Amino acid sequence: MSNPLIKATGLTKRFGDFVAVDGIDFEVEQGETFGFLGPNGAGKTSTMRMISAVSPITEGSLSVLGLDPAKEGPRLRSRLGIVPQENNLDDELTVRDNLYMYGRYFDIAKSELNERIAELVEFVQLTEKIDAKVDALSGGMKRRVTIARGLINDPDLYILDEPTTGLDPQARHALWDRLYRLKQRGITLIITTHYMDEAEQLCDRLVVMDKGKIVAEGSPRQLIEIHTPRDVVELRFPIGVLETIGGQIRELSDRTEILADRALVYTDDPDRTVAIVHAYGLEPETVLERRSSLEDVFLRLTGRTLVD
Amino acid sequence: MAIPLSVRVVEAELRIYRRTWRGSVFTGFLNPVLYLLAFGVGLGTLIDANLPEGLDGVSYLTYLAPGLLVATAMQTGASEGAWKVIAAIKWRQTWHARLATPISVHGLAIGQVLWSSIRVAMVSASFAIVMIVFGVASPLESLGSILPAILVGTAMAAGTTAFAVRVRDDSTLSMYFRFVVVPMFLFSGVLFPITQLPDWIQPVAYLTPVFHGVELARTIALGLPPLVNSWISLTYLVALTIICGWLIISPMRQRLTP
Ligand SMILES: Nc1ncnc2c1ncn2[C@@H]1O[C@H](COP(=O)(O)OP(=O)(O)OP(=O)(O)O)[C@@H](O)[C@H]1O
Ligand SMILES: [Mg+2]
Image (cartoon, rainbow over all chains, first blue to last red; front, side):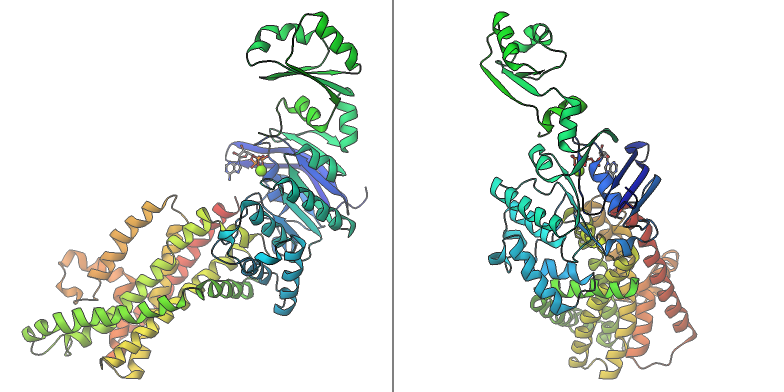
């Protein structure tokens, strides 16, 4: 932990009086894949934009690749790969032209750039679309163009804000595979996501943010072990029923979550929990026993479901 | 660092322009032909019949042509700095993407104004060619009068951009065209001398870049010697461009990198 690639101390972002990021501390090591999780409005994008040197920090200190984003923005950005939450591609231009124009700002020579574009388009599996206008691509394909664009300068740090939102399952898995290959090449990755499986698959370490603060930190495994019992029993009821029987459900365990259509009961002994449910005379539509996941940690910490 | 990357902005805009250059070049020639025919030749015949000694000693067509050249440059500059800017910030957000690269806000602003200036130069050059064809001025004089036109167009591009980066929605921009750009075309000495305007409004006309550009372009196109006023006009236009350019930076930074 001696020489982190990113070091943030008391990092704060305010928009007027509104505090979007509220004094957070974190470090990211060389070669690590680091995740930011959190509900809408938690401050993930604001944090990513500060790291990307496209938004000045309000307070605290931030060092990225040993550089100060406020003083050395251009130099820092020349070594970053940025995939923003919004694609902001030029719709009127082809895939090739979008990548080409972006690459020119990094002062990459034309011949080298053309080679790299061919490689990257292959990498995101859009070779046959290289001369199609971005306008004519599907949402998921546009996302992949943006992902390729972020790699045009062969970055040391690759920052992806919700990279797979809008991708179909195949494309998501393909992207995970690609990101994994980048990771093996030693590139440090920072990712925000709404998908728990994505965070579990990709992240070595992650932080959970809520209302501008970090509420938990660790590896996916650690977070699950620390913050939630091993198993969950999910009880599904018709809408409305839970309003009347909520009290009984809460007696089942120290930790329960009552949602609109289902109740989650956290327990180390699921079979016993189910037995008690039946003993109480409750009649759930379905009963599901499963292992606790990051999603449950998330629910516990922020009181919200992740995918909305 | 800022200046070389500004050239990349021009490169990018050129790549975008490549897709529509044919239509744009065509209207670049068609517009001056139509305007000079309608106002210079059509209306001009009536005016010349009433003014045997001419306006500034020349026919109305000769008087009008350098004025229209500058007015066209002014309008081109204004439109380059208008909806395109709102689109780049708000609708398509392409400037957000550019600022994620090593380019700075300054570099991007300079590059955009530089590109607008090139567009103005293209439009002005086709106008000058039409002037030569109409026999309004010699090739050298026609081409010389492009220079003040480019300056006016650049000042307008910078000024309009400085306005566009501040406005929240595009209806404000329509108002700007209706109440600033169009009156500037009508009342700044393009179609008739500003001495024809009521006394109280003449100082306002004197403050417009178009007035100074037209004075300069007419002096060059009619082959008149430069007056003391010409240097004032030149200084004024350069100063205006720099001030407007500077006014772009801070709101642009606030909107794109909040
Ligand atoms: N430019 C801005 N001006 C004012 N408020 C802003 C600005 N950008 C973000 N915010 C506010 O800051 C808060 C955090 O926003 P941010 O985009 O960082 O959240 P997020 O965690 O990325 O959310 P999501 O999951 O929806 O992308 C939000 O309440 C948002 O409204
Ligand atoms: Mg976000």
